[in-house]
Image (cartoon, rainbow over all chains, first blue to last red):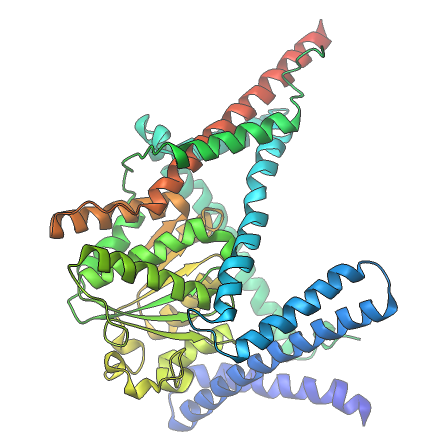
Length: 206
Length: 290
């Protein structure tokens, strides 16, 4: 029974819904449309449940970490307190002026922005150290990078580097992106087929 | 005193230089009139040509980490729409985007109040339906019936009680979808909203993501692209010109153009450091040969 619930049933459901999902796309019949709308409603519901599962998983992980006193218990405590506090504030509304909104705008937003803006410093240091024309390919990449960086600035635009940047983005960049996209598309189709047909089972875990 | 080695500058000097370079334009305002790129102009022209009363759907799919790039885009799209009498439905497919959408909207309302020319009314010109999980399913579901996807707005008001939603059922009633994003949500809008329901899609993304969407411009799957601070400053410039020509006043709030100045200095410094690093590398190589 346990094997049926954990392996056979999910595989069966994926097969049935996968095949039906593919068929309904090409069938404009009323039954097909009703099925499609029902599945959409269910998908949104299942996604909402996934958010709840993520929250529970988050709580369990940090609670266990604090209880076992292993590693960064302080950080786990902060994470738990922050999570529960925001959950509590959210219960009283998320409108402008609410505690939830104020905490979000005045604590979360600046923290998040600060973390991201640190990248500028690391990028500058890393590009100084690593971006060196050691080979022909590296020199080519370096030249393209400098042109694109300058081309996106008003200084670069004034010496027509914006046109060269546009050419790089629209021709060589587009060509390689399109190749990658086609590859990803074919790969996704193959993987989806393997999942639907039960050949690929890694997503079941365990 | 230690000898200065151009190939091995202490990273602390690099950090200080970048910090000062990025701060300077924020304190000493230097703004550059941007050259408008065709992909940004395409988005502007499309919205500009929409008849008053049209509805656009604006998806706020960005987080706080990319605010300097994405927030001005969202604000300028809203400003442009409101100036033209185009109504805006706001939604968010990312958890972080919902509260940032409200902030962007209130910034626009405040700015318009300062102009004193037109009044933006919630429920008539703008409605925010909030965040809904299940990205692809949400996009597809709007194509069937927006009421089933979002039965209420973010405040809990029934969607049927919101005047601007009276005649909006699905994408057939929406003239354009604009996705302002710091993630890969534009892929979903293109794949599901454009491909299945043929609703025109415009994209505003961070500079890092912009390169990914050029193939979709050429194929016509998106009508245009606003990429990073550069794209945002171009759009802001166009909207400000419109405000100036319509109402004869020069907007004082120019976040994207101000950010562009800081970015320009920082980028020039990065290029300078790359050049210095290479000079150091080649001089070292020359010394070794000798």
